[in-house]
Length: 373
Image (cartoon, rainbow, N blue to C red):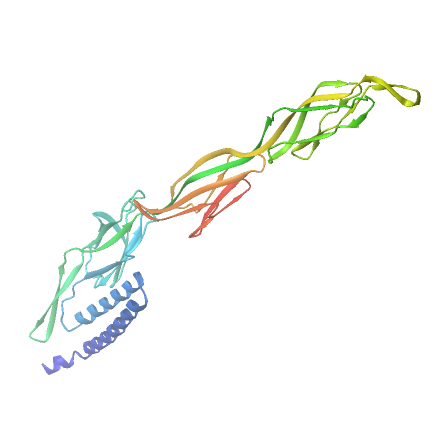
């Protein structure tokens, strides 16, 4: 018996080495839990578990039973290529006829090592139309355990025994997509003209009938927003040399009507003595002001709608054509979805062109929206 025990020195040294490796792995896993999260920490912990299992079953004449601890990556996104899953575990080279399947569909084994099996997932396992997160089972069949028996405390005999299929779960998530919806609107200035009430003018000369004087008059529109004012003159009555000329623009709101009143003269005797009136001068006319203003009106509007897309990260939308002093208004909502789940949404507008990772701007009559994520 002493001789049998002494023959285990090599195995004992391996146990010590495995124990040291286990200590390092456990320490690393603890650090990962404190400082990291997600797959990296998960992988560190799995590696520690595998090392511990190796250490435990490397004791003399222990049964060697294959197992799968976890699959990497633990999550995949639907239809992003044909992913290869790595199954991590122990004693995975035991067994000669190995097969793999995912949810019952055959999968190709691309690599097989003692601690890992790489499996290529079927291209139909994650449909691009997937709307909800779901779990899938990766199953491996054909592994074999080594059953060991110590005879008479000296000889370790072993035999290969078929093992039930082993499996690991993975999570399949729908694709992340972005969509755009909203409204764009163009406005511009248009001119409109209207006539103001008729203005009446009436002036008469003096009784001596030999006077002449200027009656040029300015008229201004009541609307302070006038951009142009013209006048239409109708002389209703004028005597002797009295007259009025065409209205002349005087700024955007006013016109000036030149005119003068002139009598027909007087009969005079010696020493310029007034003897009588030949005719008194007068001028009567009607003036109609035509006032032109500009007002901002809608030139056109349109709804924008972009269906969810995996690849698009920028969009451009042309505003409806507009004329004088065009201005553009918009509001657009960019939505990030994963299947039926709305992960986030951002709204941009002329008043708020940037929101989260979304930037927008207007240039050359078009709206540009970009996603910086």
